[in-house]
Image (cartoon, rainbow, N blue to C red; front, side, top):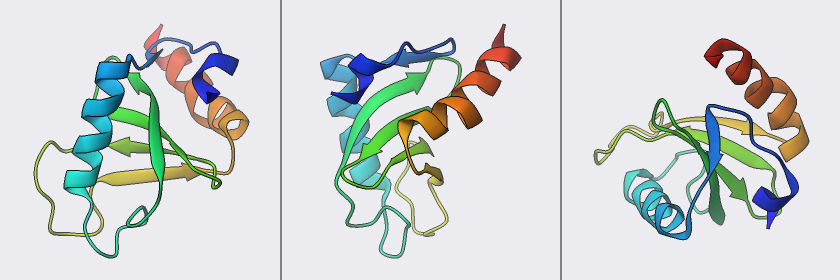
Length: 103
């Protein structure tokens, strides 16, 4: 799995199996027709420990950081989602800057 080939930097941490299941279920609940991830196959791999951002692998289509709202959404702009072509791109453009801001 993707999470095993990267050393996450704080504030990012790998998901446990229980967390993965909970975050995947929550994302499915929040997605509305027209959302950028509607119909996508995804798997949770990491989360920020200081907010509600979760990193999901998009099967065959890169990764996405999703800011879960913990409510049922009606607007396809939510939950806020930032897509990356690869885990390496995410690490450079998101994980490393998040780490620098966190420490």
